[in-house]
Image (cartoon, rainbow, N blue to C red):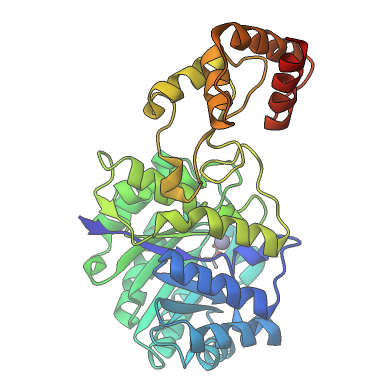
Amino acid sequence: MNKLLIFDTTLRDGEQAAGASLNIQEKLEIARALEALGVDIIEAGFPVTSPGDFEAVKRIAAEIRGCTVCGLARANPKDIDRAWEALQKARDPRIHVFISSSEVHMVHQLKKSREEVLSLARDMVARAKGYCSNIEFSPMDASRSDPQFIYALLEAVIDAGATTLNIPDTVGYAMPFEFGGLIEGIFNNVPNIDRAVISVHCHDDLGLSVANSLEAVRRGARQVECTVNGIGERAGNAALEEVVMAISTRPDLYDVTTSINTELIYPTSRLVSQRTGFPVQPNKSVVGANAFRHQSGIHQDGVIKMPKTYEIMDPKTVGVPASSLVLGKLSGRHAFKERLAELGYNLSECDFDRAFAAFKELADKKKEVTDRDIESLVAEEQRTV
Ligand code: KIV
Ligand code: ZN
């Protein structure tokens, strides 16, 4: 099986989410959790942006031994030198150099020609290579760039020493078939492509970041950049937990494995939510509060008989203790009996019928019938016998 590298950018792009700033202690705590989770690369920050970011990258680089630690830099000498200053104590440091490649960015933001962008990219990758061997290059806004220009840029930076080529869908604009086509085009048109790992970095503006990342993996990408809970700029980045669980749930489609210890996914999600102050929506895939809760009576009946009827993954594999049946007006006798047994009740047939009738009456008045409600309705029934 091929290895798919998981590049976590929770501490860099994730922290760029409006309102999600983390202090150094919180960043260190999250970095330790990511190391335990088994990510391959931690993008710890963008050192030139502030003394706080510099210090955080420096501390993470000095402490984390289990993964590569990466720092972001624009394609200019000051950014690259500062990134190296922060990273130099890392066991395996990586400098990530980026520059925009789309016409709209080059004309309106960089005010540079294609030739200027290409030579800057080549020279700055070479400068970074003077510091360490592990160099990533990203043509920003790649999905809205001329593919011919992307091919030329990638060929040049590989020659200059880039070892990972990251293809960003910076504004979350691409459709999966287009993004997959771009990745395939890169493999077919960049002559020295076998000297580098292809990575993807997708944003969620149209809710397609995970779909685009997965399509890229099908076309040969071997690194996915993602964040815990999908936090990040605007609508966020591809969610680590969704990419990892899609791949491990569908080995029939993806011939890759990751090093993620999936049982730590849920605790890591809770930690990131608590430290950033960003709640996880209840219906969020894999880590939402409702991701393994069953409300409909038909579903509850199925799950009691055989979890696989309505669960495509075992909640324990992502660190959620067990699936839970939500008792409400849609619940049937079977689910009610199970919950009574869990609560230690073993009612006679006749007591059960009366308790079930009382439960149905209560369920019509409340969204969810709690364990405490059940205890008091059973006590009430027993008093009236
Ligand atoms: O979205 C983006 O293009 C980025 C780059 C810096 C990789 O975050
Ligand atoms: Zn990004």
